[in-house]
Image (cartoon, rainbow, N blue to C red; front, side, top):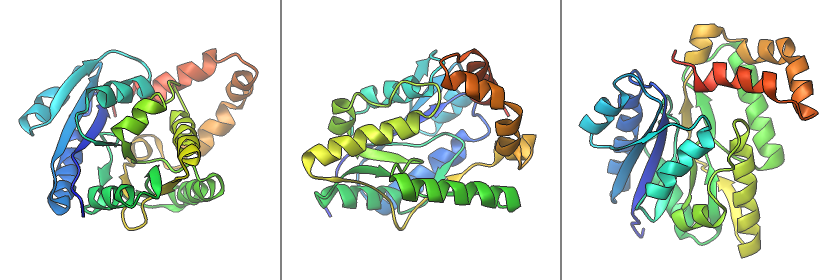
Length: 245
């Protein structure tokens, strides 16, 4: 297999508890791949030891102040020097064949890029329901998320991640899928590897978290659909941009 240079971009907000294991999973995947793999950790408003730990583990660290996960990822993509770029959130991990499989699919010439299946690091009945909802959604829409992977030139062509505070992953998958269609290529997902999805929010706030939030914040969701995003943005800040669990 042709070995291409790869850069893995990790957005991180106060992730000192998780950054070492995320980088460790990438290092393991890089060893299986056998090619050159660089890691960029984009420290977003970090006030803990995330940057220090990442640097000690050999990652390149960028500092970022945006309150938008898409902009954080895009900062890393812009700085990447690999021919292939992958993204993974800092509290998650990749399985050992992830990089090799993604590059193999790109080398085939059939695919513009893709995502990865997601599996929780532990399961319960509500987490199983969440898992099934994700699997059905991905199967129906084809907008695979999780770990994103594509050539850097492709990310540049589509304008990187759609700069939204939420649902940026699905919007970005749409961009990549449309780009692939224009080139006669498919947007796909890994088949033999997957994202190991952190359960830290569920551990902290309960396994029924997102089902409860949908019920408790039905009004905010409805208002956001009509153009008033104030309450929804506050909820997103609490769950994502200010969360330090």
